[in-house]
Image 1 (tube, one colour):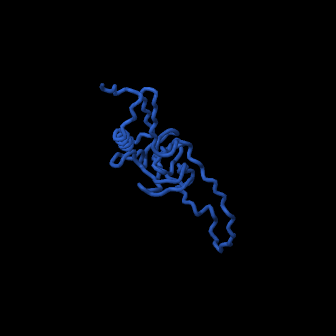
Image 2: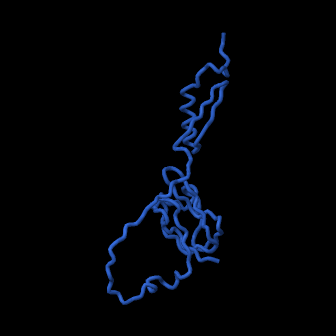
Length: 162
């Protein structure tokens, strides 16, 4: 008597599950749900998707050392940078300017961006966060390089608002 392959009493094949896990890794899938009869298996990769916690860093006051500089603080910022906005990193991670290696960058100097324009990705623990401009204007400077580690709140781009 042959068994029906859809029979609910047969266990799932471990070899097939291993193949599914490999396919999940190749295609960057987080979850696969399998159902056979009354059995339901859910395969998940990585941590459950949850909002990335924002680090709560309270800077410790540093002792103030008076400087003997006669130059005013406003002169430290060149006139060409006056009125520019910064697009900052929303998280700690690694900066990527393009969706895939070899692809053109999301933006380059001189490109116009809108509030919802994706300008780069920051990868943290294999999770890729798309960074949106959140300002309308023209990219005037890219402040980081491909693969650079970035900190929370670190300026990534300078934008001349329009």
